[in-house]
Image (cartoon, rainbow, N blue to C red):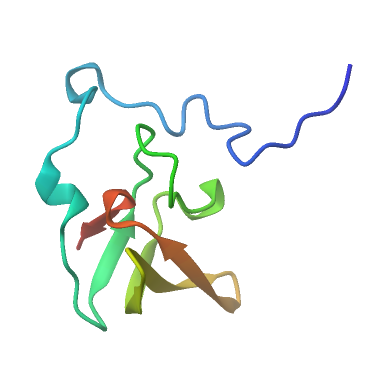
Amino acid sequence: MAHHNGPRKKTRYKFKKDLRKRGIIPVTRIIQQFEEGQKVHIICEPAFQKGMPHRRFHGKTGTILGKRGRAWLLSIKDGNSEKMVISRPQHLRAQ
């Protein structure tokens, strides 16, 4: 059998939502605004695949660098290196 390496592999439990939090998310989460330098938590919203950051960054905290289209640019410390992540606001929560 072929070995599958999709962007959502090994996320069965990582992206799982609580029973009462399933379904449509509030519109305020989709249109939320951030300021440069603000700290945000990356919590991937499994109902929206578009603009979802890599599973490696789920649960991490980053700093907003700016906006790129509908998405936000984040700076995240990953080990000893700084990484730039592009994510839509559905997957971000203000600290």
